[in-house]
Length: 450
Image (cartoon, rainbow, N blue to C red; front, side, top):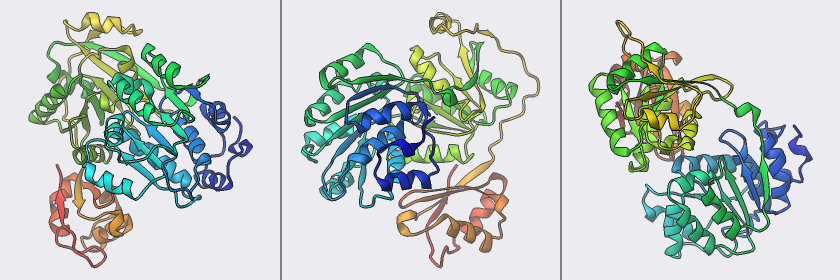
C-alpha cells in the first residue's frame, strides 16, 4: 500500500501522522483520499475497522482554515459512541495544526451546554442527526461556511430512521459543499440521498483484508433461552460478551434476569442517558462486568478489543443487523465466536438470514462453573479538566492504600470524572482505605460501582 507521504497534505497533518505512527495507507484510504483531496463528492463502501475515519478526517482537516472561526465541516454519525470516536481521531490528527475546535453534538446530554459551546464557535461539528437537526431548527449555528459534509455509516443511520433528518440537514448546508458518504451496505434508500444531494460522486468499493474477521458462527436450538446462556458461556469458555436483543424492553428484562441468576450484566440501549451509557461501556471494557446486554445501538460505533464472542439472544430481523452484530467479535486478527439462540418460533426467520450454518441442539453440560467478574470500578469526582492524571490515581492507590500494580486495572478519564478498576475480591477493602485518602493533596468524592 502507498505511503501517506505521497499525498498533498499540509505539513502539520504529516507530522501528526508520523507521531501517531501511521505510515502506509489502508485500501480505503489509498482509494478515497486522492478523490477527497480533489474536493470531489465520494461514495465509499467501507466497513468498520477499514480506516475510513482517518480517510475523511484528513480530507476535512486539509480544508480547514484555523483563522476563520466558523463551522467549516459537519460529520453525521448514527450513534453518540461513534461520534465521540470520530471526534477523538480528528482531534489527534489536528493537534499539530493548533487552534482547531471540534464539537460533538449528540442527544442524551443536556442541550444547554451545547448551545453555550456553539456561541463560542467551532470549526468542525461531529454529531447525531436528531440533535444536529434540532439545533439547526433553533438557529443555534450558522452553516454558511460549511465546505464538507460527511455521512458516516450512512446505512446504519437510515436503518435507525434518520433519513428524513439527514435530508433536512443537507438542505441547511450550502449547495457548493463537498459531500462524502461512507457505508458498509447500500440499501435502496441511500439512492435518494446520493441522487438529490451529491454532485457526480465517485463510487469506491474496496476489500480490506485486515478487517475480515475470523468468526465461527453457531446456532443453537433452545426454547428456554435464559439457562441456555449459562450453558453457552461455559461450553465456549466465554469471559466477556455482548448479548444482543431486538428491543430495549427485552434488553432490560434479560439484564435483570441474568443478574437474578448470578450472572453479572449491564445494559446498553438508546433510551439510556449518556452518563449511564458511558459508565456501562467503561465497566464492560475494564472487566467490571463481563456481559453487556445491548440493542443494535451497540452493533456499530463501539470498538471493544478482545471480545470473546457475541450472542444473539434473539434472531435479528435483518441480515445487515446480523452482520453488524457479529462484526463486534473476531477483530484485530483474533478469532471470534458468534452464537445465535433460536427457538421454534424463530427457526424460519433464522433460515431467511441465509447463513451457511444449520441450528443444532445445545449440548448438555454438567457442573457448569459460574462466570467470574474480575474487577470492580471506583469512580472519582474529578477528571482531565480538573488536572487529575491517571498517574496521580495510581500513585495514591499505591502510596496511600498499599496496593501493587497488579491490583490496579484500567483507568478511564472524562472531563470531570475518573474511573479506576481494582481487583474485585479486594474492592470493598480498597475502597474503604481509599475513600477518605487524598490524591495530589486534594480530597475528592469517591464511590464504588457495581
